Image (cartoon, rainbow, N blue to C red; front, top):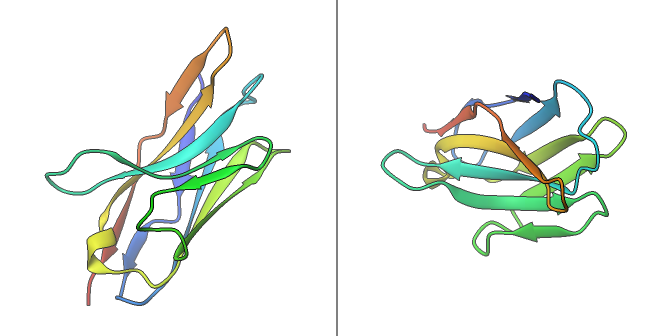
Length: 118
């Protein structure tokens, strides 16, 4: 079983920036893509951004321009640069890794808390 380890969360003031990282406990064979999701208090888990091993990115419509996802394929680690953070960005941010061709797999991280408050 692979564990995904997120880091970089914390408390930041409105307008500030954070950079999240997500690294696996071991190599994931045939990895297809990785992504960041978030879940605000009382809300559902939603996609923030996704990146394939080929470099194709997808963003939630409301976040593109402020958030940037990137991947280091050599170490299967993804990053989420978050700029101009607002209180509505407060959530637990989760990392996900998938292989979408047979044999498929999907792993979730434990989450890292991001709180935007003055």
